[in-house]
Amino acid sequence: MQKNITFLAILLLCAATGMAGCTGTPQIPALPSTAGTPAATQAPSAPAQNNLIVSPTDVMPDNNAVSVVVQEKVYDATIPVVFGGGKGQYLVKSARVVLYRSDGQVIMENLGIKKDDTVRLPGTKQTDRVVVYVSEVNGMEYKVADVLSEYRTR
Image 1 (cartoon, rainbow, N blue to C red):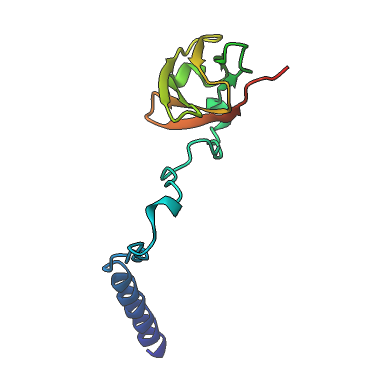
Image 2 (image 1 turned 45 degrees about the vertical axis):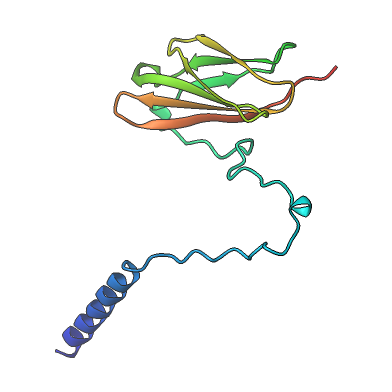
């Protein structure tokens, strides 16, 4: 009997805690006022998100794995991206490439889903970021490549 009362008390406490934690909205802190500072001394604001920072790619199941190779930039700053196929090639519905250029432009291109299909992206003569997403017939989408592409200097 004592165990049942303890169990019910713990269950009630957990339920109350869970409900109380889900009802609030996060407070956004106020920014300090800049009314007294001259405009010439303020630095220009940076973009909200830096698109030239790579992030981890998704791990595909072994039997669904495909490869995509982002090749080195050529002399005119073009970036070749090649679909390499793999065990899961027959499950791929589409592939798309997103190029984040160092000048702030974002370019999206579709990549073919047959082995050795290639798309050439117009990069810059600085460092650009290339991200490749593969969508499967079951509705899953995987980020299979996320690399920085630097311009070769010789």
